[in-house]
Amino acid sequence: MLHCNAFSASRDEVFAIPTPEPTTTWKPVAHRQFVESILELSACAGLTLKSEGYGLTRHGHRLFGVLAFEQSAEHGFCIGIRNSHDKTMTAGIVAGARIFLCDNLAFSGAFRVKRKHTSGIDIGAIVCDAFKQLPDQIENLFKNLERLKLEGLSDDEARAVIFRTPEKGVIAPSEMLGVWNEYKQPCHEEFREPTKFNLLMAFTEKAKRQPVSKLDRMHQQLPALLGY
Image (cartoon, rainbow, N blue to C red):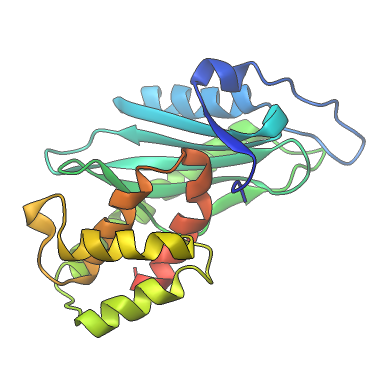
């Protein structure tokens, strides 16, 4: 995961990262090729890119990125990507939602489309496969988020969820109070009701202060903790 020794990066900085030479059994995917494949296919699909953010570890060996697209007046969807040049993780793509009111992000969990960097890896095919699966992922995610808006939480239940997050790597222990305060006194009045959705918004609101490179673990673990 991209948790330590990581920094936010621009698209140009990502594109400037050199790709290691392949071996007979391992073929690294260029960060630039991965991102460009996403951008080209999304443009062909008529999608409007709203924002993009990237994180790199030291030396640029690992990449995590979020590309957000417009969809409706209330929300859009986004794509999370990850890639590595040091054999630590597979190349992957995951669907997510972007809430326009607060510009918060919520992902569907684990990377659903992922491939090892074997000699036969075809990043173009991976991206095409991902775009075929994304509509169903996004539809299910939006349905689950609407369900969370109807599921109430007592203060004890909310505290129990927050208390479990450090052991799952979602946040640091020192960040728990900030999430609790955001949940009880949200920046946006619309998120004041004690529901699972609004607790999710508290987590994602505080996550805005984190570099994109630290969000991987959070968005993989929150769905299991909150049931979406």
